[in-house]
Length: 225
Image (cartoon, rainbow, N blue to C red; front, side, top):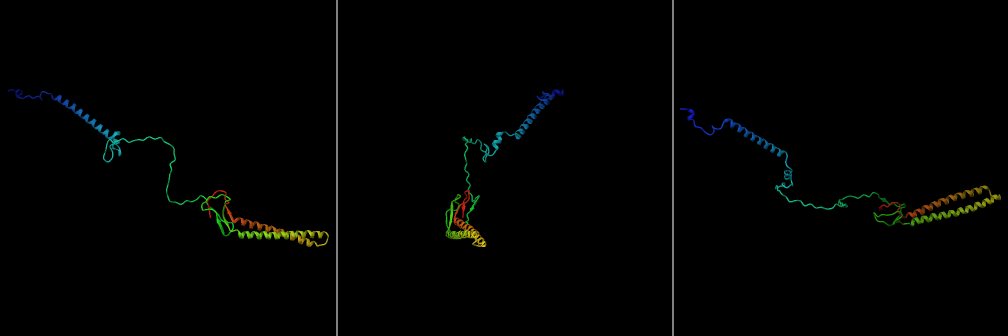
């Protein structure tokens, strides 16, 4: 009996083995290419995130926040015209204010102050009266100086008249020259005395004027006692 005739035949036996191997190779190549392309696309997406995804992942973005909310309402934007203006700046703080310059008013003469005609921190001008001192003692000193000057001037006038007479007698050879020289020296002495008296009188008059103290500074400064 023939062995080939006894062996059953199937559909697989009809397809050649060589044809199956080629088909499997093609399918495997396609699958490998697809897997490689998918891996490359996934790597590119991971290394190059889209702007939409970045914005959504950022805090405060459409998809950000604690609850991951999406689709937040749009922000209202106002439009206005820019104008140039001054913005007041107010600072409230504790501190000490120091003036740039101060003036201390001191009297030229000592005495009892009668009136103070300015307030602390008041602005004053040159020539304004600030204070007055009791002038009576200075008035007495001025009167004394004036009286002494007048007395010495009278003595000087008398000495000059006497000197003129002595000179006349000397021309008549009726008096010694020594008497004329002595009288001339007395006239010189009295002239010096009168000069001193005039200086003393001027000093007394000046001191009397100091009893009415006025501002002498040219610029305007706050007054201080």
